[in-house]
Length: 123
Image 1: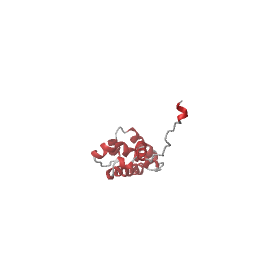
Image 2 (image 1 turned 30 degrees about the horizontal axis):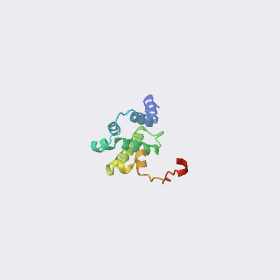
Image 3 (image 1 turned 180 degrees about the vertical axis):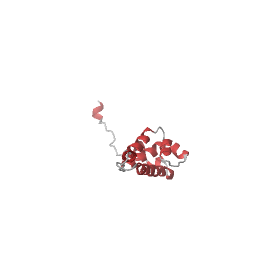
Image 4 (image 1 turned 90 degrees about the horizontal axis):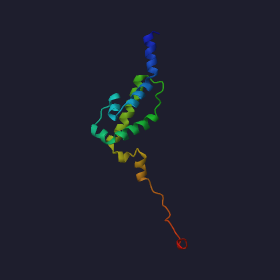
């Protein structure tokens, strides 16, 4: 095995960490789309950028990228971003309710017993 092949093989074994590292260093949602070469509508991203990235993270949590070659790890990340983006093209952040605050806004409220103060306690 030549030094070039060994270097290439070593780079492939680090690939998931490399693409994940690049994504972690990205400063904006647009950079995610550019790094992974995913086409997007700026209007959708402007409205749902945090929601898209949060959903991407949820989807990535279910992926096992360890030991994958660079091209495959990047392709999986791209597919996950495309899937997350598609969720918000088809519906709104309010419909998707990715964040806890939005989930809690529609969660059924548990009925509370009315506060009761007996007349004897008022003396």
